[in-house]
Length: 511
Image (cartoon, rainbow, N blue to C red):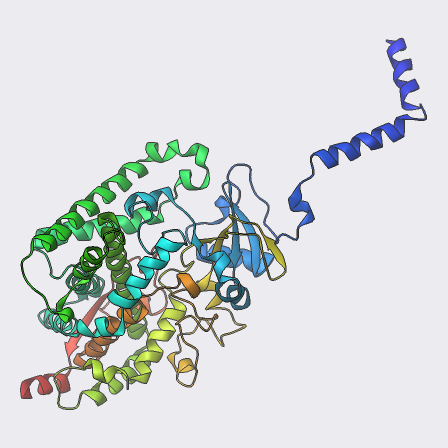
């Protein structure tokens, strides 16, 4: 034992021992050099092994990430399992991503869950950035969602608005479930514009259940997306089974819709064609342009995106109006002022309704339907606000946080539509403090389509009825719980009492 100790002491005090140790340290550092250390990465919260920062997302990720950003900055790096994610919470950083370097941020994060439902990325929302995406976006913008095409569906919108008004009138003094009414209205309008007609009650009920399940599975955490080697857990939890059921249900319905159109012998004028008609025309003109799966994927995008956006906007708008009677009164005065001797507010009147436009802007500011927008992914290494963002990094833009940032908004937690009356700030992708529909190449192409639907029904509802909360619902004035998920709407249905307005009744009687 003493011999070993003497040997160790001799080695430690040898003149070459210290240089040898230093050489080993240098070689270890050089051989195991981490490239990330030489880069200026965004600040990052401490992470757990395997989970990364997933445990910090909580039930409402837009709120949790906003809290983290106040500590770590407007650009921060979090790890969702094994997925590095850059979280952006300021308008200036969003501008760099959505405008300055937009081309490098035009890919979508790929999700196994979504790929199963939307035909392996053949839709416009989740397809990879490239030639195919540019082709189908051009079709959607120029043919499905053009100003001319949106106007051609005017009769559909007016007919469905009239049905909503009659449905509410039939309720008498009983509370009405406006959440259910708005969902049915949005779905019916999109059915008639996308598919050409509404379907029998049992088919429509099944489709609505599919739509509800689709929204729910989008909100479920998929282990396979964030920790691939634990993807088998998605089978154990039943998530894969639920996704397969939704995908097969949608495909069966859409296959039936497309086949109906193929078998139809009715000749339609251009202004009578629905989305499926138009896409089939494109396919006939160029068989290589669209496959059948592409047609079904695009139509599914149009239906789901249009329904959810419209429904969520309508539900939150009516919620804020009943919570703020003075705003409701101001909007009613405007709507009743433009109606004159007509039976309803027409689409021609909407352009003059500046207060309605301000109300909708304020609702979209406070309640963006997708508070974290849709995730993007970098295609190349790029710098944002001086930080190095590596290729294949997931990018999360917290629109909810940006639109409540006191840097850009005075009293951001207050519902004040008046802030938009003398303001040029809009939500169409040029003002980065207001991006509820995103911006740049991957911004939502259907803004005008959804907006005219929402404006028309809201204008006529406030014009035709006086509204109040039922007894016992006074708590809604102070607190409205949100529903957790990718799309943030109310947790509980909006129940209100609608009383037909005297002026509206007289106008309809005279007509």
